Length: 453
Ligand code: FCB
Figure 1 (cartoon, helix red, strand yellow):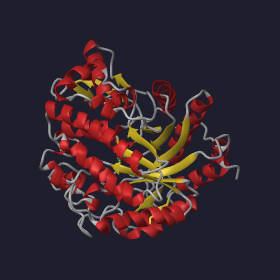
Figure 2 (cartoon, protein in one colour):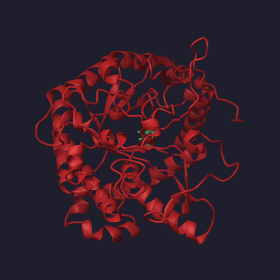
Figure 3 (spheres, rainbow, N blue to C red):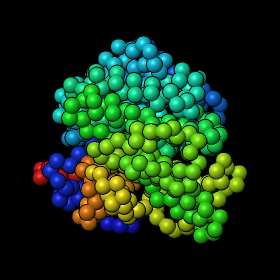
């Protein structure tokens, strides 16, 4: 942390006045109320019950209790002057068994989310799938079952019909390669099925679900702005050996190409194209490649890859080279300039406007001091570096239209439980008290400056 800090006022100046500054959250990570009002388990509720899968046996059963504290959380967002709130709807709250009977009470909750978001002057961005597949669908094969793609389209229709009078921005999936690679190859995410064929099938069926979902949204929501959120990060060999290079090339296809390429270019990357052949039915590539309005990018930092013959596909996660970049928690390295490069590369490759739908920094140590202040300098440093690189990339031609911090508040960070705190707002998980961190004030100032305030 040696670079001088840019002031939020200077950093905010020079962005387009309508730049979509916001925050992101996801249903399972914040809502809680897991068994309330008709919601049934998702694959993550089930995973949390298996010993050893989540740090300290923690779960999203209560999480931030956002389900019951919605007005307070919306007020905190309004106070920051955000333009956009990106959240996800929980499929198992809306269709508790994944298909069939619709749970109106579940939809009522999202009515409240949308109405209050709008009343606070923010634009709601609704993501349909942030990893919480209804367990009832997992029991009939989950994403390895081609029918799940069609059930997803039915679910998208239910949500669209209910929300289209107030929501115009829709995201089909969040980080499909994370939940497929982690869920089917290294047991870091639900459903934890370790099998090559299952991984390939799930990948193809999620792509198909995306394409079908885009069509449903397009036909039901006049004027909809539709896209998918991808987690593109540079994949580089931990050290330059032929084995590491080969592992890197394959992980790069799975991580960065497996979803954006078929969805936007109409084909899989070369190695995957061959492996995928048995699962592709006639007409599928056209069903998957449907015109999108934007590319959603979640970016944190590069992946250092090493060959690891013990893993399903022979790729493993290595470490950042000694001295290269500061380090955030969870071993995620901080490389702001890679973010700028990624924005330029994606603009060139897909030709779509980009919204950064997640970027942020997890600190274990964030806590209120004796005066109740959470002085999260590390996050302010992180955000100023990344936003600075984004601004520079935009000046060089990257077509970026918005930026959303992960996350509004500390929340349930999947397998890492409540350890890493990513929020602009601190949450005490015993009392559920919210305390805005200094970074939230810093972000508010930046947004104000960007609007000429
Ligand atoms: C992303 C996820 C999000 C959160 C952040 C830290 O991969 O989309 O849910 O866990 O990482």
